[in-house]
Image (cartoon, rainbow, N blue to C red):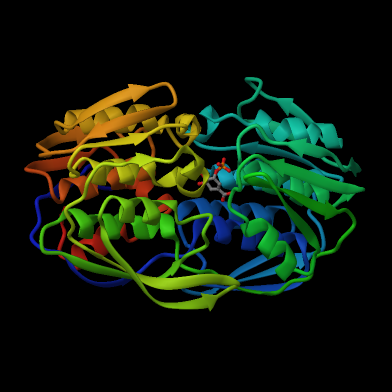
Length: 435
Ligand code: S3P
């Protein structure tokens, strides 16, 4: 196992690559397939460690899960989950554990959920509190609000839940539990979060109501609806496509195209922000795949300028602030990222780690409780960055290193495989000096 990966200043990057399958949609395809009756055939599934953990979990809950070929998986659902024989280990995946807790809560079973060191630090009450209000029971094994936790599921009653912060994970957990609850489950979101669960529930035959309310929406689901297995084509992940595209934007002379990128407007806040920064980013061949709009996105080296990112855009790019910050380091002026306190409870405290990593690379950064400000200019590099088990922190600094004056290393590239297996090979294929 490599214990470090180093990016060095590279000459122009060029080429066409395919984004790996979308992580959010891959988790959902497996989980809904496991809850459904009948066969779900999935194409383009992300085979990252987070998703493989969810595949094992769905199998442990009683569904048949087979790999038919690269990215091709078959899930045979038995119309419900049953008590697993072992602890459900979700690895590094917040989405995996939160959605699975919601899915499992409506069945008469007991299950213990656990994860790696990073997942054990992440808050879980945002999901278990509403599920408890619906009738599920949770026993904390070590620490209130943190994994491991034991769930006893069973007869649930629908609730109305108003979210303080837009969270697709919380919304999805409640909706999946709501499938087996008595009554109509309602989730009110102040801002819209990604709607993959709503779309996929419909593809599996359930009715979901969506009504605009202010900047957000009210999502409703009647309990007692059975899901039917279906075919799912997973589109390319815009959150992963962001890394080769960012490398294209900051490395002089580059032109990089990522094919098949999902363009769901609740996921493309980064692309809008880059365009406002002056990025030469173009989208071609817009088409439909798997119920989502996709397109081929091309990034050419661009003279970027700093911007103030609208706070209302946070939900549509919450995972993209680390790579935005890396590109902002090369922009002229300040890029202001505020209203992103949620970044502190992702796979790591992403504000603290980006601030520390960028500063180690000679970039001026101001840290705030709920945000940070990057002042762009020359990026010195010449540092080994601490990633704290966070794949996006690792990839963001490696991309930065491709255009920095001196090499940039990350202490632990192993976690990159949670969301982007083949990242280093892809970047090398484009001409990046990564070893
Ligand atoms: C996800 C939702 C987001 C995001 C995560 C994936 C999902 O989390 O950060 O990577 O698939 O629903 P929150 O819902 O907690 O904001």
